[in-house]
Length: 122
Image (cartoon, rainbow, N blue to C red; front, side, top):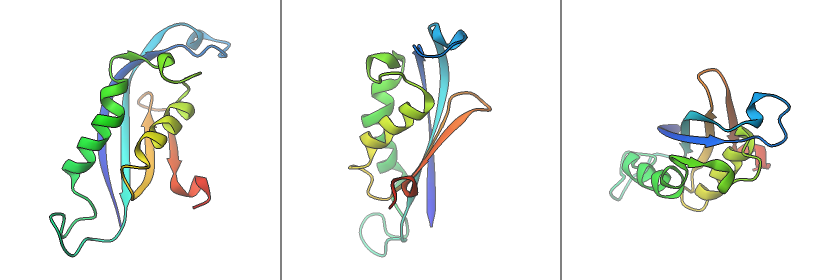
């Protein structure tokens, strides 16, 4: 089974290799969906859950949202395309969310990048 939690952050970037208008500074209202896969826990404080949504929220905010929100992404990520941003996010979360299964990063209302655990051959 899989659960998902949704986050938002605002950030600006420049795509230095882009031939068009994205080579100029501009910003996006990003939407990030974090999916966790695993069995439903049968004991402990998260009994009956795959993972506590509050735990997911705390981890994603601490390791991603609080770092990227209202920043220039080029300061943290070289050539911050949606693909590079989502890979950066995965690296920040993979050691903290053992059931991390999928990330979806929406750069606009109609454009997103998707990264799945299976993309790593796992």
